[in-house]
Amino acid sequence: MPAVNSGKVLVTGANGYVAVWVVKSYLDHGFSVRGTVRSESKAPYLRNLFKSYGDRFEVAIVEDITKDGAFDEAVKGVDAIAHTASPFHMTAVEPAEMIDPAVRGTVGILQSALTHGPSVKRIVVTSSCASVFSILSEPRVFSEADWNEGHIAEVKEKGKDASVMAKYCASKTLAERAAWEWVEAHKGEIGWDLVVLNPPYVFGPFLHEVDKPENLNESARDWYDTVVKSTKDHKTLADWGASWVDVRDLGLAHTLAVTKQEASGERIITSAGTFKYQDFLNVAHKLYPQLPAGNTSYDSAKAVHYFKYAPEKEQKLLGIKFRSIEEMTKDTLEDFKARGWL
Image: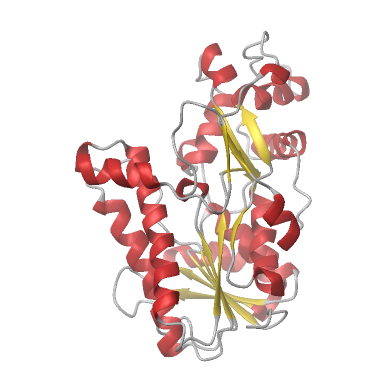
């Protein structure tokens, strides 16, 4: 299918941390956006946030994304879809609490697009590097060819006794795999193509509605607690890390995923690079000396990164100039300061 360079995009879960930046990026690039939220109470904040875009932004209510036909009305009259809605919380007991909504919501929107979205030309699903990496004892570079089989196996073996991280990773992996399998099974019927984005940890400033740090999403609250509240010990600060991306760059990636013809049918990792938590503290303490210095013996040149992601595919297909740790940290702390959180 051809790329989509104008028209209306449906963004699911539009009040989420990532999704609000996704909406803004589409609007900034000239698209109209229909954003879904679970209740009318979530809509006024978004309408006010995007009021400068006039009638190019609208809200649709989808109360339960796991219900059959949940998106049947929402997909009507849109040219592209960005499906960002998926559960991410660390309180699930049964794996199904995470897995079922993720799988059913993803497959459900594909089915709705087939049966009620004749104008849809491309669908972007926000997956995660949680569906890519595996826990290994040696450092490794992962690519789009890799799948997280280990956490699926752990959930199958241990059920509710599996780690929360395993449940989350399994939900992302199984939802993404279900999307690809559904597209393959219906390739003779659909008039659109699929693109999947796989971001690692997402950090950066906030546009969504949040009243206090305790109510931030999981990754953002962890960043706040670590950098501002000093909740990690020195060993963890120096040893623990992964890969990351600025939320604003991930928002842009969703736009490029529909405007770039080359992205058609591709799975794309969107990673800015690696981090150890002390990297953030080094920048933060330099900017705001009252913030904790953390592990001052840390040497970034000696850090061993177990999770790296190959950048070649993203650079070839999307070509994002990712923000640096310094820029992301500076902008996030400025956001915290403006909210009175520093």
